[in-house]
Image 1 (cartoon, rainbow, N blue to C red):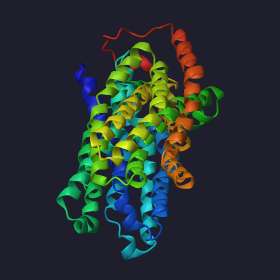
Image 2: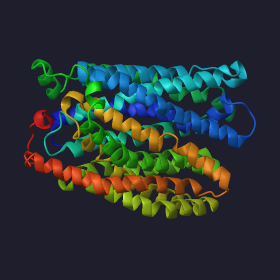
Image 3: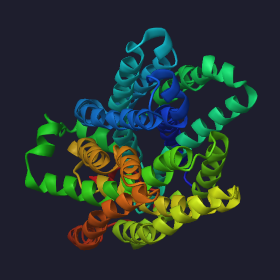
Image 4: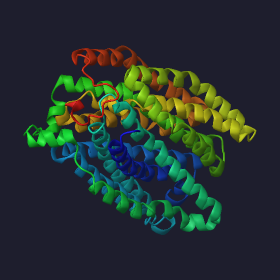
Length: 449
């Protein structure tokens, strides 16, 4: 990234977003421990399904966060909004670290955990859209895909930090110490990080696009109504939901989140090896995000996403079958390799998404439109994917039934991207008269008006 201004903007936005996803995924990294501490003892399969359901329920809260915070971003500013959402998310995470366990508080413990997961979902439902639009509206023309794709990598980076921290705690602490108090550390560490990230964000300036809209009196009176009352807006939401976000949700939550459940619950791999294999795959895939984002600037967002979805569909079943075989023989490099392949293909699907969806909406309701498309896609395709996949494995006795569900879920995303996404992107480029500035331009802000 050659432009130091936009580099600072992306970095400051990414710090908060990484933290948001770290907070959210700390629960995933600690699923086994939290299941034992917060759910009643009994059938381990039922306990695992309940843990996966708790993960999914937080997704139902995300649209609420979108309804609350995304119109706020379009009315009072992108910057102010993602300062607030950071506090909501961080506060809920710290509170999880202070909860009593089931042994100490009975049914209050899982109920409180579920409530705080919902609060996390509300915070994250408003956070990511504000951050994406903030970066998009600062990005130079012709490089939106490159710069916004960095934010997409924050989901896996947040999980990586959670995995590494949990693994280090498990290595350095005794099992009794970890179960007694060590599991609380990842949650409590959010407090100082939230403080630092908040101070960084408070020093950031508002986007040029929003500032111009405010100064010229062109801000929408009701971004929410503007987003939901026209068919044109709903077409953009549905395109984002069933194309870009649907593909992202399925590939990400199968390759990373469900992969955790698959390794630990289905294949009975210990948490240390599970976390190590996933951490290596995430590190190797991380540099691919800006590469695929930049590629989308050159050949089109939909084409990159389409190729990524197609390759992921073709690779998923053989990859999971290979992981099962390698785990049975404790060949950890052979487990890591197919996880890495899926993680790289996931990056190919995810990287163009922010620029693709934000380009569908006018600046007056851009954050709201992005939030609706993202959260509907997450609910329909991602949030309950681990629960459904594990349920299929349990019901059929087929260890690969879960990945079969993921492949089937991607077929409508493949069709929408192929028959609607590419056509929509081509029509928009034609309507704009291909007026984009050269890639070397460093003009920011007004490109998305």
